[in-house]
Image 1 (cartoon, rainbow, N blue to C red):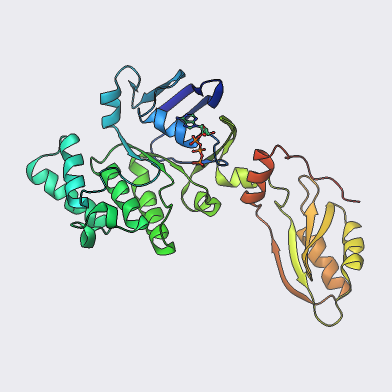
Image 2: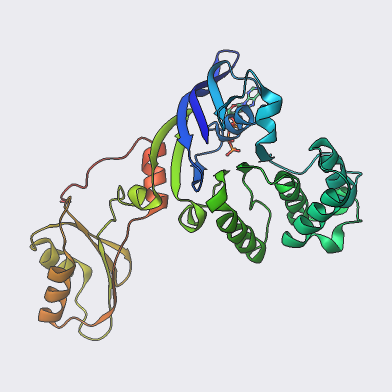
Amino acid sequence: MLEVSDLVKRFGPFAAVDGISFRVQRGEVLGFLGPNGAGKSTTMKMITGFLGPTAGTVTVAGIDALADPIAAKRKIGYLPEGAPAYPDMTPAGYLSFIADVRGLKGAKKRERIAEIAGRIELERVMHQPIDTLSKGFKRRVGLAQALLHDPEILILDEPTDGLDPNQKHQVRDLIAELSPEKAIIISTHILEEVSAVCSRAMIIARGKVVADGTPDELMARSRFRGAVVAVIEGEGAPDFETIREDLLKLPGVAAVEQEAPGRLTALPAEGAMIADAVSGLIRARGWPMRSFHVDPGRLDEVFRSITSGREGPTEKAA
Ligand SMILES: Nc1ncnc2c1ncn2[C@@H]1O[C@H](COP(=O)(O)OP(=O)(O)OP(=O)(O)O)[C@@H](O)[C@H]1O
């Protein structure tokens, strides 16, 4: 549905996007993750034809977007960063203008605007100047214009930025609802959003793709994947050093860390399954255990280690 090949954008000598390639199929929701300034928005602007690339190609539903940008833009709905332009317009006027640009007319135009305004819950602000709307409503007006022509491809730059928790949830539900029929790219700084809505996540750093996989595949790169997190506290609880020494004797336990008083994390050596051995030891010793769970991996830690170049195998701690 969407293919990007060797995309490059230089601003003077600086490469903001430095050879990015990927494909997105119908039904996929691809999350762009990356630190500030990684090149996410610049990539989105090039895909949507708002910025010309220095090199590379963008193919949108079989159309070469650089050779035929107008045909490509018909296939795409784009929510840029920040607020919609035309602050003096009302959402009703703005959506009407966008509908005209998109070639929607008459009853079809009215129906489509009403449908989208209802779906995104814009009705009560339709006649208030955009400039006077809250950040969340401005964002929703932007989302409405991106969806108006029911595009096959959606490019949403931080779609939940500025929304309150209920609105964030609503937009995530909307993305999930739209996803079977569309190819969707969202950029986000909210890592839980990736697990909540993305079928695939790509981490971008310094203009390059540094990781690409399902959220679960990325979490599997975490040093906490398969770790046992247990809270041992109360009468009869030994001190951390005693627990640590005992747990380190178990086969497959690579390290034991204390995240908070009483809360310890036993990390597995690569590929080791340690949950049964750890729970067995805790029971055998009779230590008072308040909680116990196996960690699925932590996306925030993977993100930090990949983007700071500190990723490495779990080592046996001294
Ligand atoms: N028009 C421009 N002229 C010069 N440099 C630019 C221009 N636009 C973007 N940049 C630079 O390119 C880099 C990538 O910016 P971009 O906005 O794509 O990052 P981002 O990953 O979207 O960041 P954020 O998460 O903060 O939105 C940044 O260093 C930015 O300062």
